[in-house]
Image 1: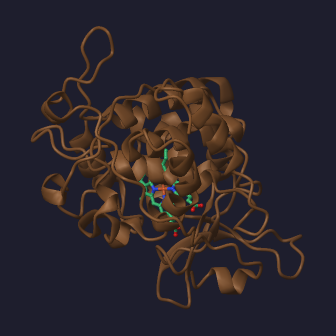
Image 2: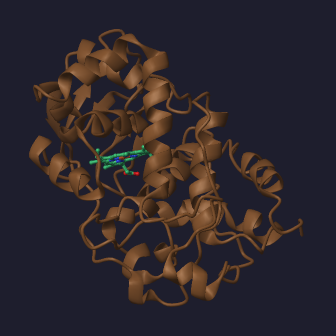
Length: 311
Ligand code: HEM
């Protein structure tokens, strides 16, 4: 066990969990980024509810939300880290794992501050339906992200998270990676969004997505994909200029992404000038670290992709 507050030791152990040759594209990084984002993206500015404080995904009401399908594997991959550092809250661990993963995959440094607490029951879990639905369009993106307090530029920058990872048929129903190297953070997503010819396709499961099939692809090569919401960024007159800027200027994208991801993981967290969290739950309850969940990591270290798809 490390010294309470030794977040550098936690960072090092998160890094140690990233490389998993038998999982997906060989890294848990994209999953950690999605875990950090979904734990935060339930925030509602108006009612000041949701957000990363509390780690609600430990409860079925939030963890079992179909929008969070697959993230149980991310949480399980982080259990060995929690075991070595039982003092850290799940809410700090999950947000930190996203930040560490982005950096390790070649992305920008993202400011991260500790102090989130783990709620002691599910009474503060926000209602389902607050996370975006990839099958929809620009109006939906604005409806969801304005509720969190983001503007159009921030929506486009955040969507650059889709430089990483893939859709899984058994999780969201969407299938395939957005870019050729889905474990390397870059602005490739925006370049491909603008420059490739995306064709609408209906998958065997009835889900509609956009695909690019490389004419020089070899047999068995996976086509790249875009969600309908990703395509909406290219089509919408207010989103598109930002897509163009980020496609041209990687440094600008990295700078904006770092700022907006830092804002995302702080949604609903109130701090005093010294950085201490002053939300009522945190002040009353202190830094409540939920007990570690399970000693049996049940992650999906299986070799064969067709088997993985069923996990
Ligand atoms: C703009 C609205 C968004 C929609 C509709 C959306 C939707 C989706 C969907 C459907 C998947 C596939 C999940 C699966 O089947 O495993 C996915 C994956 C992913 N999303 Fe998003 N997302 C959005 C925003 C974001 C944001 C803001 C981030 C982070 C900044 C992000 C990061 C990721 C990552 C890293 C993955 C890959 C996860 C993996 O490989 O397991 N997404 N997203």
